[in-house]
Length: 163
Image (cartoon, rainbow, N blue to C red; front, side):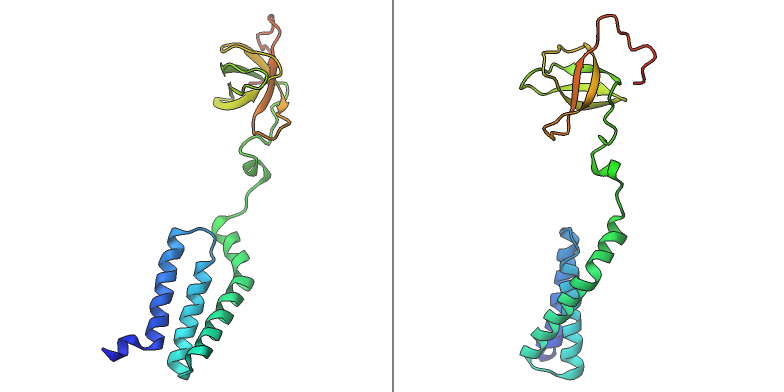
């Protein structure tokens, strides 16, 4: 049973625990500390070095992995995002398009509109009741991820305008 508590086995087990912890956390950081633990286990087994040297090997391998490989791992496993995806679907301001109010909006009160088959937050400097047709002015200036809308003229049925 003494062989189970040797330094290289403990470093290996620490690497396994860190790999399992990486599965529960995002960011690809613990993965590199697991890699460092495996390198320290190999060094402890092959070179029979002391604990201080094992810690130095662990830290050097972990930090080198983070510095050299983390960015590549993130790019490979997370992929690249387009600006449209980064804007939560609001990259197109929708300016000039027609929408329908599904929850009343007004000054200081965020409402909701139905636009392109989805529901979006909406803001307006004037009160607009539920069910009214509105024209999208653009994105709200306060960076709330909402559309800025204004009431459509009473005679406007939205003919010729894209929804």
